[in-house]
Image: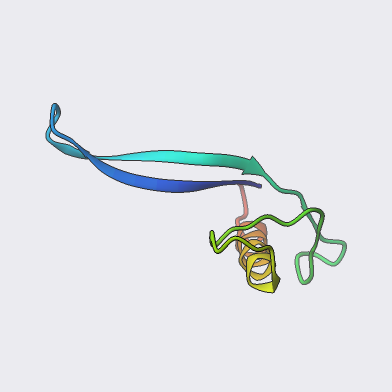
Length: 73
């Protein structure tokens, strides 16, 4: 799955809110039991607190579980 941080801003020229994707990375989440559990290599600091911990892995696994439930991604 591709993971990116989203930044919202305002463009005064067009007078509207803009969205930009920052720090795009790809993470592989593998499930051998139909999406019940996942294993991940090299987790990343998702929440931006400067360390890679269980909270970061929980966020990525949650995203993988949600994505696996989409019928036609």
